[in-house]
Length: 390
Image 1: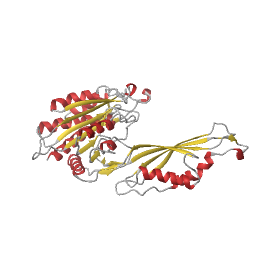
Image 2: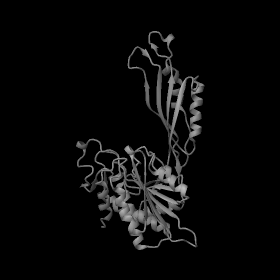
Image 3: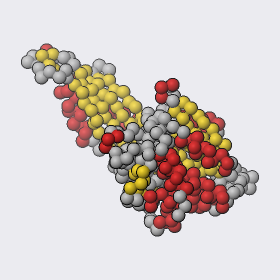
Image 4: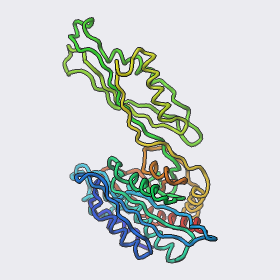
């Protein structure tokens, strides 16, 4: 067994790269990529107290009949979420530790093992094919687990401004369930949050005629919003969902009618809906229940990302074949789960999929990855390179 991927994963886990810190991860990876012919560029962004490090590294491939070779991008993040209480970990989260056939440490699954597997896969591929008709690139950030304002989106905007063409992208998010390769994400739902503030008139609860309770004003509209079918989804996406995350109202006293109520909610939406259409339907619902914008309520929107979808084609076929050849698994395509930086990359790259190890322990105490899952993941990435370069 080749232990290069395991050793690189351990070295990355040992870097305490809690978002937005990179803690030397990208420099470590660039040091492996530069001797292979990659031009490595660091792009920093964000305020001084939240400085984000991004790496763009590219190796041009051999031209085909005078045309530039297509580009495959390996994308991911070097930052990790906070550890939580150290006393609850079975071992130091930044000291890679082996127990019962598993590698423990923060980022073991999300997603330092994927990054290590990608780099070693490229090393092996180029050793066998030093002049492939395929350009290879890496897009790495330290701001995926944070606000994501100064990470991948900044790099994508820079690439777009340069006229850089990307053809395929594999994001190393942990997508698998039981075994590496049993599920890949060929898209993700969009996410959009709203903050609704309904105004009332504060008053004594014993004299309701002298006040106006905003909770009572909102309640009928809220019930309709909860019961609304926003769309029915499609062959790739489940129906759009609308969920309330927080409701704040009142002074804490039991005898005071509140002067306002604030509701935080979120849409996870499919390609069957648009942000603009969903926003208008919310406003229409509020209007049907007598609530007037500005006069009775204010509504602020935050679009976290639009949905993206890669239908079966060149990249999906290459990934499916690689997984089948390496593991014997017929992989499942899925768009479930949260958002990822794939939403930004999809704006500049037509084919984006996510493929990584099992995700059962991500963001948890004692995050880990089965050692037996590491080498197959590297081999799958290498086989995808071979399939696309064929």
